[in-house]
Length: 339
Image (cartoon, rainbow, N blue to C red; front, side, top):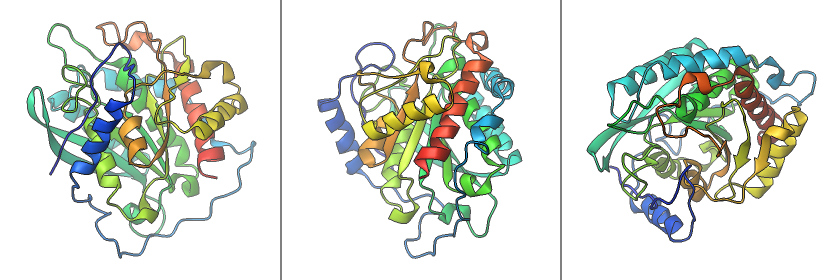
């Protein structure tokens, strides 16, 4: 069972004012309660234990293992899949590619499949979830405190080919790098869930029946899971790879305390000038998650010149920018989100 809710559009780069839009999302989250996915259906099953989390040390910090060239290669591979709107064959190929890469890195994947109503009719959507395989028991029964997410669909266009190198592929590639690096520290990786959201992009324009399909579905399911197995904090990655990188964390549905910690993490990693706070409110996948109860931060570069154009191609990406986003995301997670 699915249902939809999404605020109305206003302006470029997902810029929105909240107010009544938030109410629409709230009603949508409360209106239907889907059955929880595999691994979270039982409220009585004993949670899988976690290895002790080691103390954080600057010398052993995971962010130092990041390879910008590796991230760029992943982003180029996803971009090469072509236009990837929800329900397309290209998106299925992308999904299979992400599954294979994650599994090769030691993560187990799960498809969270559902259908939803859109201006293009009923469309099948699939959120791709991943948890680290190492350790005893079922990873889907673990208490994972942190969620790291991006969207992997591209916006539907009929008049040009939109391949979404920065708007989609960049966040996916940074997530894969996070998966690769975290695999070297199983105690950290065990505490993370990676999610690649389907249907973030609106088919036409953002309304309660168009856009944010994957994150709204995930948020509704999240509310049904046992409390000790819900991620409590989260990081969303969206448009994090352009050459002139300037992450601006939006004000709405983003914890002020966590945004300040993210700035501290950027400074710790030596990349403070690439990060700032925005007083703008935007409509992105962090909104339904935050409204459901997850404490979220959104890493997004709002000033992308070729946003939603045919020119959002792989040549717009920078290995260094991708590395900066990954380093700060890893340091933020390991040093602050998990503590």
